[in-house]
Length: 63
Image (cartoon, rainbow, N blue to C red; front, top):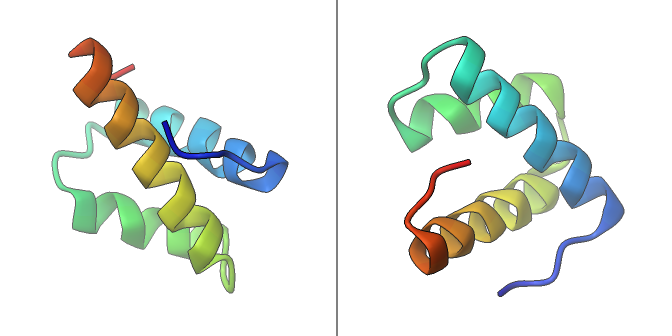
């Protein structure tokens, strides 16, 4: 599983919350929402998405 920095974890928490609350269906839409919340933190967004994807691949459970 990829490493997750403290700021990556913050972005991951927001990603899960946004995806659930706004019923986000596409990665592009999720990234757009995260980019609005976390401007200039594209690396943290990439890290959070990779971590979440690895979790889903490993467990089969989105969140």
